[in-house]
Image 1 (tube, one colour):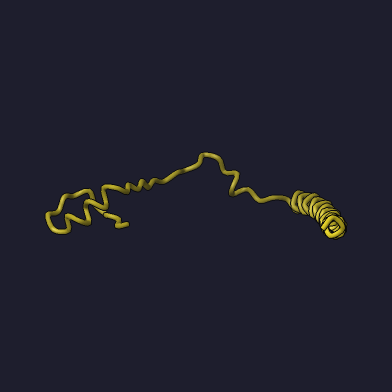
Image 2: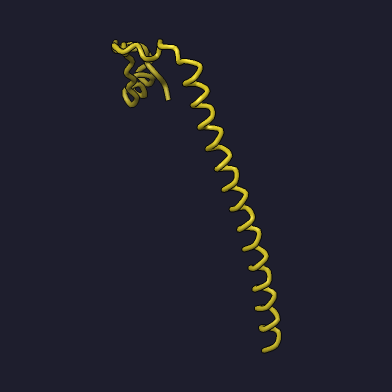
Length: 93
């Protein structure tokens, strides 16, 4: 892709202009009236937020451990079933 920095039609570089017609980029400036980004959070708010996130992280880690245990048990069960299937198949042959 080729990007054009102007809208002028130059006779030189017609190929570049052809490619530039395929891509249009818009730029702008957005100014917010609210000053929420500039406000400082109180230490208590940050500490409470951190505590909530830490608690949630612990919960997610515990859930992940349970899921890994379940997956491991399912893999073991699958291996057992495949072994039984193989044994049954050999019996009929």
